Image 1: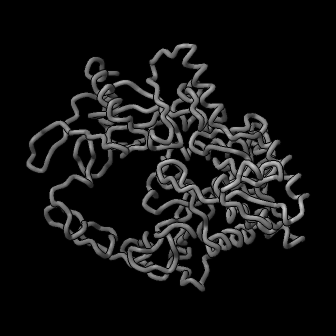
Image 2: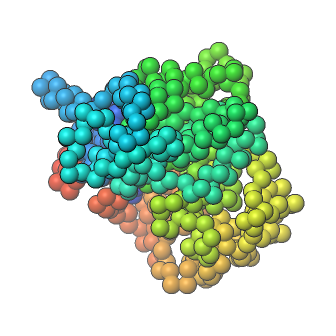
Image 3: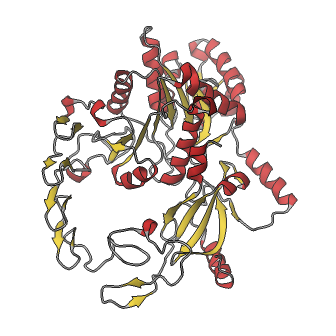
Length: 502
């Protein structure tokens, strides 16, 4: 492992109140596998100490109904159970290999238009010998070459919000990304979970012969194996940096990144919004390691566009301090809320985080974006420069207002509460410690930076009356990404009472 990846592994990230995921070198190497690749290690934390037993759970699915894998870290698993698990994992892999899918695709494109069929129910391209097995299904015919070049219009988007929700860029946002990438001079794009961007890049390259643009798609949706060959698509889980095609697929990705001595390539990623930031950041740093490699230590890091809601800014910047957030609002075709053109709080909260200097990112003036000469970056129409903060402070697209008591700009709907000594919504619950540390109750820092965070006993939480009491840690059902089922949580608490881990 490269130094950057190894350094990041020695960390932990908060999953929900009382549950953390541990990203350690050892846990990565010995983690058991589920159908989605290596699992992640989790632990319950209370009062700054680990309580109960650590457990492994799926990296990709938040709900155990979607992936039922669960194993205690110190649990001894019998050989018979390991064999059964291995067989179960194999049974949940795609029915055909990528090579077999490509062989079928070559047969498919040789068929006359009248015999090219696609099953909407099974999401499968059908050869004539497959027809009998799909009688009574919703089958469409006359699949043209233009259809095959736009697989996102043939395939149903995956819409399980707790597993692999798949929202597709609207044409407006997709075109903006392509134009921006070209204007910045990039020739290759690593598309991580961005199938529509990959699609448009290939269409642009084929339509304009002089455009030498290459694209490689990494996605957990294996259905794209039907349309793209091994040099165009890799089956990949971005939550655990797992290539389902093994070393061969990883080598293809590495070769793509290191082409032309690693120059002229950028990574664009659009992860599921319910995913954990820190495991995603770990995977992206591993992809950067593939780009740099041992022989190219002097090469600049792989530039990155990370598309995510603006309210994750602090977590993303914690992982990538060099990142800044652009004002550009990204919208999606198949999302009811995240659409451009709405006003007020209904605007899309999705933004682009990048390490490319903001002054180089030109946002479209036709949509109201303008250059702030003081900040030297493009901002939205309603984002006004605050002389006291010396920046354009709005995060959500509305004009924010400055609070002299808080000494910062806040949302326009907030008011300053003298009881809480902070700005909040008018109907907020006074006396809450939302702005303070979850462990000790003090203001000015959060749980992560609390000096009592890990390995220290006796940390007390102080309420507003000044009385000391122990914080109550509640693990809500499905509140975290991998909270165990109710019966398992009871078992975990029971074990935690008998023996507390240091």
